[in-house]
Amino acid sequence: MCRPEHFTVSYRINPWMNPQLPTDTSLAVSQWQELYDTYRRLGIDVQLIDPIDGLPDMVYSANGGFVLDGKAYGASFTYPERQPEGPAYMEWFGANGFEVVVPEEVNEGEGDFLLVGDVILAGTGFRSASDSHAEIGRVFGREVVSLTLVNPSFYHLDTAIAVLDPEPVDGVSNIAYLESAFDDRSLAILRERYPDAIIVSEQDASILGLNSYSDGYNVVIAARATGFERQLRERGYNPIGVDLSELLLGGGGVKCCTLELRR
Image (cartoon, rainbow, N blue to C red; front, side):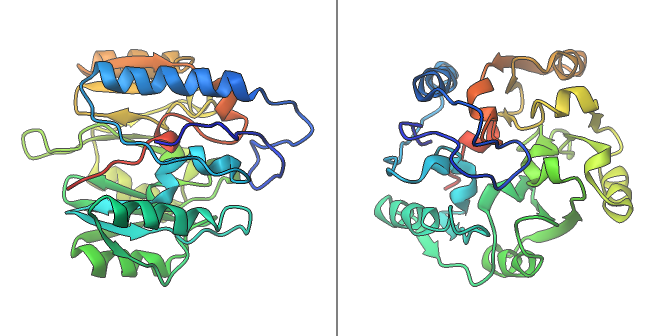
């Protein structure tokens, strides 16, 4: 995670961002602290990367890479405003004992790569180039399933899909997703692979309710995503709501602020 000490919205690279609206950095920090404290209460070991002045989106650490089997596949950002984040995160990975793979293709880390069981779901359409899907498959030797995003408000895969079961339960890992975020081909794939998935409403998705973290039982979600909260409870999960409304002004939520380090 990365404390949002320099958070502001000074440019516009997604539909959520509006530089004309004021942002409150201190509020962003206190809301982020609530998320950090929630993870600590759940017994999660949280590592921090130092924020860098001039990189206000560095708080969205999920975009900094994809880490699996002790190997860190670095990010190569689409927009110039965020491109310095890639080397910063790769430097941190290397200093903390991970084997660093410098990307050749444009990708935005766990924003567009989600591990579901042994499969990597990979998003494209707005940020990560489709060529990065083949590259990450070569790096990790895992099956990669390409999905195309079509709604600019859900420009990263982690805004449109929530991984509910990081490890398979009775051989199955489940997800939740927003149908309207995907093209027809991708929807057909999701419906075939995850017939018991939770289908989240437009209302809950519109506050990045799907941008969440799950350990397989506890699911940390946007506090205002009350419909998704109810759906999770009905399926036997324990939803935990956190208010990240200030960070939503930059287009990020719970998962955006969370990069999973899988050794």
